[in-house]
Structures are given as structure tokens and as C-alpha cells.
Image 1: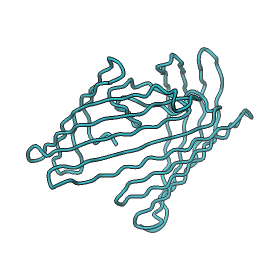
Image 2 (image 1 turned 135 degrees about the vertical axis):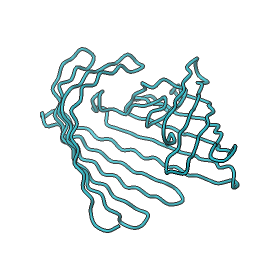
Image 3 (image 1 turned 45 degrees about the horizontal axis):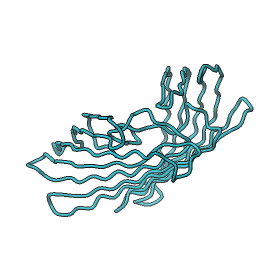
Image 4 (image 1 turned 90 degrees about the vertical axis):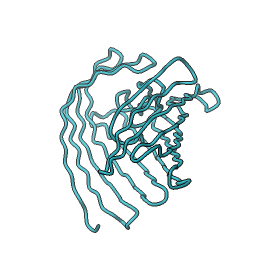
Length: 237
């Protein structure tokens, strides 16, 4: 539990993506990531990272070269409540404006009996208005920032998401799940002007007691006709 743990990863990438607001980018380049991790206590873990990001990028038909030195810090609490706090500073090595991002997520699992439980997760993030399109917050659908039942290509300088789940044991190893998601990604709108995503869904999970679960989910948007489904290993958050 004591001391630092270090990791070094290198990625060569070529990514093309169009967001729901029809903004798009194509980025190809290199990404070097160095992380150092240590436990401050049995419940708190600290992560400090530095990254080098270099890409030839086209954003909305405008070509540019991106070279960033990215400093990350993260604090993790794993106790009755799982809490993660994130801070990122993107230093532009080409001399243009640099940018920053702050975020948190908090998840609590409350057993109601030996055969059912309730889970709530809240997530939010803010960033500077000069954060480039390809490095902004993005999610939706069944992504890491999930709004299941919504489109999977949402983006913005800010986001706020609440996920609710009820799990009921059906039979040995199989759980039925009902869930609801609420949230949105946005730029500079006031909270009252945001067109919030609202979704409902159901799923089933199989837990073979091997340290992972296999899960099948179906979700429907209450805002539009969007429908989504996902099968995968692990829970949504």
C-alpha cells in the first residue's frame, strides 16, 4: 500500500468523429502518458500524471498542428461513497492559449436487502472555453459518461449527469436492473436553458463470481425517439 507505482503508455492514433451538433474533427498523431500512483491512506489514492499529445488535426475543415503538455491530478476515495476528483491543465507548446478541465464523479451503492440494492451516481465537469473540440468533454449513450438511450456523440465545455439504478436478484447469479439517466453536455447556456436528456431503461446482469459481470441493457430516450442497447462486461459506472 505504501510507495509510488509508475506506468508509461504510448498510443499512435487516427480518430475521426462527428458530434451531434455537426461539428467534427479528424486527428492523427502520438500520445505518451506517464502516471504515478500512491495510496495516501487505505481509502485515499493519489494519481499524478503528465502526457505529451501531438496531432495533425482538422477541426471543422480548418487544419492545425496540436502539441500539448498535459498535467493531470486525480484523487480517489473508495469507502462507503466512491469519489473521484480530477484536474487537468493543457499547456499549448505552440504558444497559443492553454486550457484547463475540472471534473468529479461520486457513486454510492445502498443495499436494501440481501436480494436488491439501489445505486446513484453523479458526475459533473467544467472546462475553459478555449479547450479544442477534440479534447472537450464528450459522451452520451453507453460511454464512460453515460446517458443511456441518448445519442453517443454529445459534447460540450461542461456536463452534468445523474444515473440511478435498482438491482433485483432474480435467481443465482442473475440480476434484473431498472435505470434512469438525466443530464446533458453544454457550452455557455444557463442551466434553465439547457435541453436536458432524460432516459429510462432495463437490463439483466450475470455475475459468475469471478470478479466481473456480463450485462445486457436496453434504454429509451424520453426526449426523442432515440433507442439504444448494449452488451458488455462490467457495469456502466
